Image 1 (cartoon, one colour):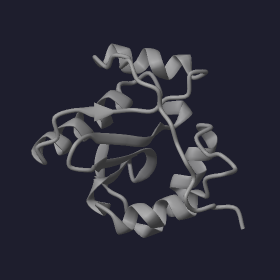
Image 2: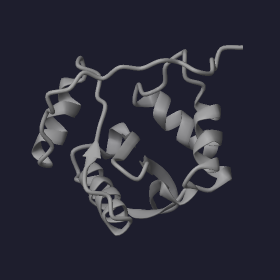
Image 3: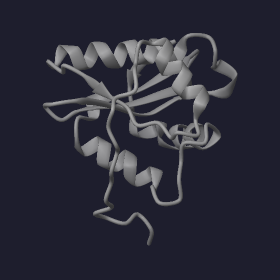
Image 4: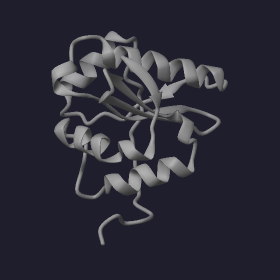
Length: 140
């Protein structure tokens, strides 16, 4: 897998991948999520491709205190081949270069397969509660 920065022409393939992986939600417009990311640390939005075919994504960020990884996705036909691990190693490398001391992840509690994936990569559950508040609605 070749990992490279996201290009605007990747948008439809990225959204199709996110939908196939069950990552999109009605309250998050994926087009707006991409637009927002391209305005903040666009170099940390990466995709994976094999033979020119986009098959993986990771949206990485660093706020000066913690790193985050969102929209980690690997196409269904490319799962269990260590591509997710490869993307996370790249995310860790990029964040470490920026001086990031820790990565936080948010995973839906119902997504047990993904929780197992991250445990295998050395991630542990923190004793925290994740809270959120919507400031801008994506619903038009």
